[in-house]
Each structure stands twice: as C-alpha cells, then as structure tokens.
Length: 184
Image (cartoon, rainbow, N blue to C red; front, side, top):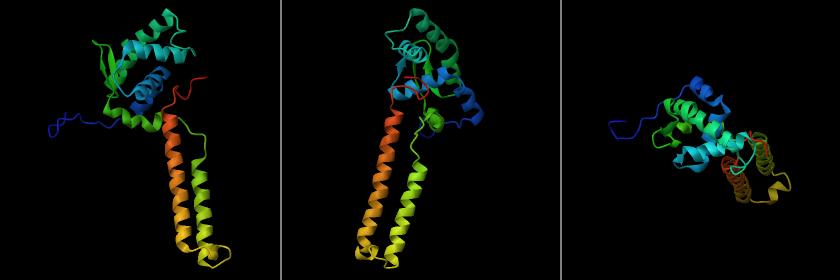
C-alpha cells in the first residue's frame, strides 16, 4: 500500500514475467474471462468456463472429469502463479478471484487481433485529405469551388467518424464471448 493515499501500489511487470505468465493457454483463458466479467468470480464458475473453452463445448456439455481437472490446476498452479505475479487477487480460502490493477499492463498482449488494416486505412485517409487540401490551395477545379471551411469540416468529420468506428470495433472485439484462439 502506498502510505500517501492507501491505494495499492502498481508494480511494473517485467516483459519476461508477462511472457512467462501468458505462455500458458489456461492462464490466458482465465484472464480473458476475468476481464470479460469485470467482477470477483468464484473459482468453480471460472473453472467451468475455461474447461468449456478448452474442450470446445458449453458449460452444460462438460463432464465431471473435465471440470475437476481444470478446477484443480487453477486452484493449485495457475491462480497462485497469477497472484504471485500481482496480476490477480486470489482468495484461496473463499475461492474467489478478480483482476488486480496490474492486469492492465497485459492489455497489449491479450487484446484480440483486429484483422482490419487500420494503419493503411488512416494512411489512405490522410493522403486523400492532403490531396483535397493541396487541390484547394492551388485553386484546382473542382476543389476550389468548395469553401475552405467545408473542406476542413469534411476532413475533421472523416477522421472523427473513423476514430469512432475504430474505437467501437475494438470495444466489441474486447467483449467477445470467446478468447480469440478458441475455435467456434
């Protein structure tokens, strides 16, 4: 705890630690589910969902052995490792786990991949905007027929709309039900 404000201190996770934690699929599934729920989760609920993803089935379709295997490994190995790394808060006695503040450092490593080529899109939008501005500046018809203010509003609106679409798409991807590497 920080003595100044009584909030937990966020420790900087090393890249080696992050890669070590994330090299295991079961831990990645665990982090995905905890992020999705955004609340403390009971170990049994977590184990069922992770087992369902691992076995490509629903929670209802799991066998007792599949549940028990995942529950045991989460209880004995994976959750203590995540807790020792400071990524989750794990109360082993109560069987409750939730993401800690340090989990935010994993965001760039766990984010579902967006197949849309946003970099190329924004580059093309910038090139088109530059052509419009240069055409207007050089009084090339039809660019010179439209007032500068209109061009400015159109270009800003195009970037604003694009940024909003990008943001909403990322939010949708982040909230997807299954982790990105689980087959449908």
